[in-house]
Length: 129
Image 1 (cartoon, rainbow, N blue to C red):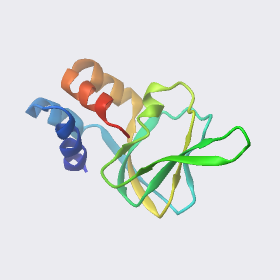
Image 2: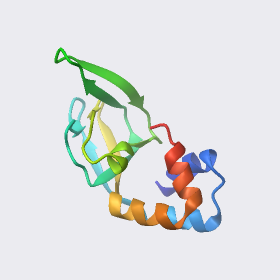
Image 3: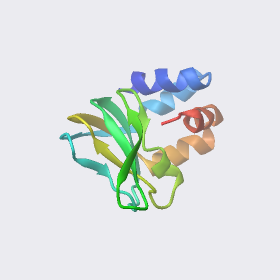
């Protein structure tokens, strides 16, 4: 799992060996969800983000008329829901479009690493997902 996130972030910024070592301690437990299950609700206040290991996840926003619009589709290897790290309250939801497996990353650990390792902070900020 660590190799998956390290490879993705290394493409966004040159990571040193120390940066890669820090990543190895970020990923927490795995979570599985069935197709159609919400991973994060709009209006929620998650304390973790996720690395998508398998399946597909959709980011959706609620429209003024009550409809929903998918604004992004995530594939394995995407570090999904980094918005939850930056936003106090979620302005979108994340739902499994297929059966999925994710690895969690606690925001407290992500904050610690990004404050002390600037290359990692830049790579995380550049990740479009």
